[in-house]
Image 1 (spheres, rainbow, N blue to C red):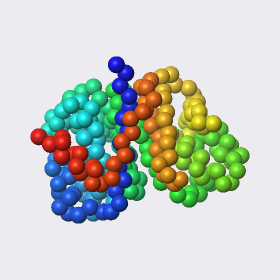
Image 2: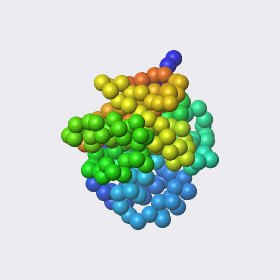
Image 3: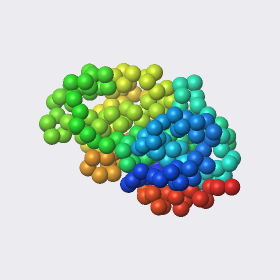
Image 4: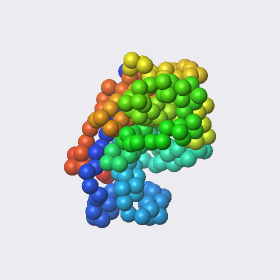
Length: 233
């Protein structure tokens, strides 16, 4: 049976209270609790914690296990990985009110971004020469959206590879034309998926799986807290 990539999208409207934060911390490992302790209270710390718990739910649901059965670690480049039980890959991203998680049997990367104004003169560190030339030739009113389409795809690829900034963003090119996504230099058995949640929010997924993502779960805060109770124990 071919198992599809599962994508979870969570929208958080407001900062969470102290009691809710403490409840979420019950789900994570001591290392994560200590890490969060170094952050000031705010959106970043909250979303980091929410992303961790969302990933735990996604993995538990996929494998049919409970949260207590999960042990996480990091690879040589710092990417979070599931150590126990094995056989599953996941990745997390967050931006503003949005948190995204992807799980798959193969390596997977996901990136979600809110489209905001940027200085295009600084794009050379992110885009290849070919991408910069293509972007420059686009009509002015489409440049910003296209830049984010490319940026999230590149982020998802680098995160899938699990090497972070050790892969320079301008060392490879991605082109999106008529809904088709192409990468140069080409890499076999590589698949991309991209979708807009609204006009100014989009996410991209990169996976080694040959199955196109078909299962996408959208949650608000209330739905999220109802579901995570199912992985206790």
